[in-house]
Every structure is written in structure tokens, then in C-alpha cells.
Image (cartoon, rainbow, N blue to C red; front, side):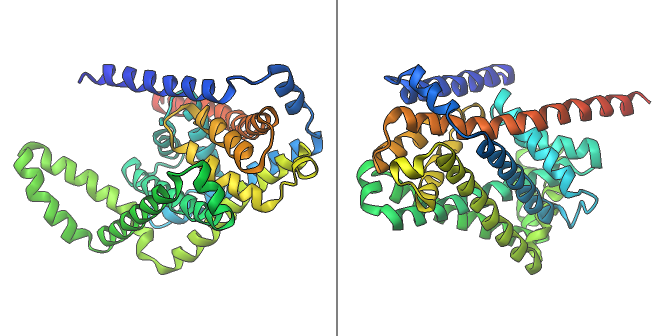
Amino acid sequence: MNKTLKQILQFVVSFGLMGLFLYWAFAGTDPQELWQAITGISLPWVGLIFITTLCTLVLRAWRWTVLMRPFAPQVTNLDASLAIAICYAANVAIPRSGEVMRCVSLKWTKGASISALMATVVVERILDLFWLFIYVGAALLLLRDRINAEFPWMEKASIVALMGCLVALILLVLISVYREKALDKIRPVLERISAKLAEPVLNILKTFIVGLSALQRPSAYLEIIISSILLNTGYVLIIYETFYGMGFDRLYGLDEAAALVIMAISSIGVIAPTPGAAGSYHFLFSRALHRLYMVPLNPALACATLAHAMATLTYVFIGGPALLWQWRNNRRSAAI
């Protein structure tokens, strides 16, 4: 398939899915009631949600710098935070482009290898899935019967996904530790496919495996675990703050446990290839609130919309200008 045609098809499918999920989420709701619920949140809570969102950005950057430390020690937490904000901002415009853009950002600003950076992104994504399904497991412990009744696919899918993440992480650790043996196994396969391309592809793979170097250091695991727990706790806190700011604690009795359950279920929507998780996040968040906690659909969807909008606007307002600034500086450097 032609590369341009493939990109157009991916774009159409992504925005088509977003439209479908948004239709499912918003069908039958009252726009005026939605708007009243959204604008009814206390402004100090909006500020607190913004601060907590920034904290999660810094925590994610901390975990990423741990993975980059062996080959790119020059990357600071601020550099990584801006690159991640660029990643999320890019995903809003072009789905799944953000992972490449955050690597390009650090290539522009710090001269880090894109192949090595992509390896850390792969590890990061597997870690995200691993911790997501750990939290889904916690949600099932809290509301197993109700979740299985409303989302019967979730328990089995979570077990399969969690096992898949564990296998993938173990495989990456083994590749990192036994790098030369892995490359020796891959070399004859590549040479049979194309003798001309074998060496260039091997060089890219060598650089990619360099990006897995942190997995060889036992000391890195403690930082990865701590940052991951704090990061996901931050995501739970954002949802709880949204509940509290909208008065859901008083109206519907929602507490920290409910925030954990909703965070786990709604985060599954982030996996869907929609722009900035729009639509899929709204649908799962609002339906989980509605079906599991009997929150009326309009307030539930308003809460989902507010939580998603706060995160998206934070990333766009930071990542958008950062991307333009870095792009201009890179062009100037190239022109000299």
C-alpha cells in the first residue's frame, strides 16, 4: 500500500472512531445541562486540577529520564517534561504522532539518538499498560460483581493484557542483557531478506538496544516503580479533585475508591487510536460513572468532559508553544 494512502487511511479511521465514540457518548444528552454542570465547578478546584496535571507531567518525565540516563544523561527533567507535553499536544492533532515527536524534540534540543529514544518509549508504553491493568485489578477487587455485570469483557482482557506486558518486559530485559547474542540471531535473518539492507538495519537495532540499557541496572527499577506509583496516584487524584469540585462527593457519595475505579476504566479508552483519546475516554468514563455509581448521564458526561479538557488544554498550552520554539531554533541552527 502507498505510504501516503496508508497515512490518509489511518487518519480517516482515527477520526472516524473518535466521531463514533463521541456520538455514543453524547447521544441523548442535554447540551444545556451538560454546560451548566461543567461551568458549575469551583474555580479553585480548576487551579488544583491544573497543578496536579503538571505534577503528573513531571513524574512521567522523571520515569523517562531514568530510562534515558545511561545514554542521554544530559536530558533534564524539564527537557523531558516539555517533550512529553509536545507528545500529547501532537496526538491531539495527528493521532499516534506524539511518540515520534517527543523523540524528535530531544534530538533537536539535546542531540539524543532517536532510535535509542524510541526504545525507551516502547518500554514506557509497556509500563503504562502494565500499571493500568494493575489498577484495573484493584478496581475489580473493589467492585468485581458490578464491573463484571456491566463490562463482562474487562476481567479476562485485563489478565491477558497483564500477562502480555510481563512477557514483553522480560523479553526486553533479556535483549538488553544478552545484546550481542540477540544481534547474532537477528543478523542471518536480515541477510537472507536483504544482504544490502542487513547492516544498516542492524546499526539501527544496535542503537535501539542501547535505549534499553537502563533495564540492566537494578537501581533503576526502584525509581521506575516509585515514579509509576506516584504517577498513577496523580491520575486518581485528578479524577477525585474533579469529583470534589463538581460536588459529586456530596451528591453521589463518590470517594477516593470511586476515583480509582473510574481512572482504571476510563484509561482503557486512552488505548483507542483516537485523537487525544477523545470520544473513547468520554464514553468509558461517563458510562462507568453512570452504570457503577448511578450518576445521571448528563453530570457523568460533564465530569468526563471536564477531566479530559483540563488535561488536553494543559498539554496543548505547554506543548504547542514548546514545539514551535524548538522547531524555529532547529531551523536557525540548520541554516548556520
